[in-house]
Image 1 (cartoon, helix red, strand yellow):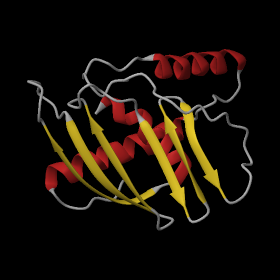
Image 2 (cartoon, rainbow, N blue to C red; image 1 turned 180 degrees about the vertical axis):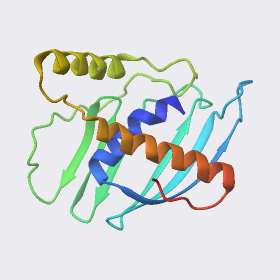
Image 3 (spheres, rainbow, N blue to C red; image 1 turned 45 degrees about the vertical axis):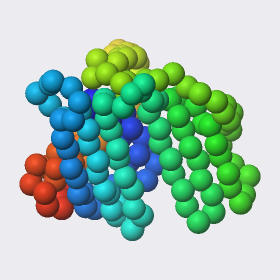
Image 4 (cartoon, rainbow, N blue to C red; image 1 turned 180 degrees about the horizontal axis):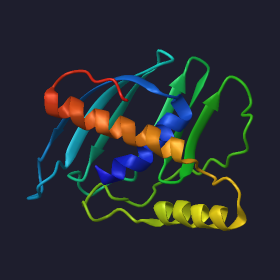
Length: 165
């Protein structure tokens, strides 16, 4: 699912590599040739567990969301904002918590995803080549995300656990 790729990028950046994936996908609400609903269960190499839920069949549509919880706290990101950050210790990063409703995002329509994030990454890559510097997001990060997305699709297709390559 196109909207899930951005979330997968954040998830592997926060949590690290995935050891094993289980998944299911279906076309539930739209007359399209691809899935409009997907769920995946992830086991990270660290031992942590995770889930990916993606749909373009939810009405009225909801913003993408990433939630990370641990034994000492958690953070919730909605759209592009931190909406909740609770921790035993003060945060080591500066973040503004902006609670409240975000725009619906692409959760309602397969065509609702804006290309803005991809455009910025591509623009930085072009600038990096011209300036002979490393890009902000190296290709290896994209490869990790793509590997996970392909593993989710394979697990959904086969009904068996899959190890990302």
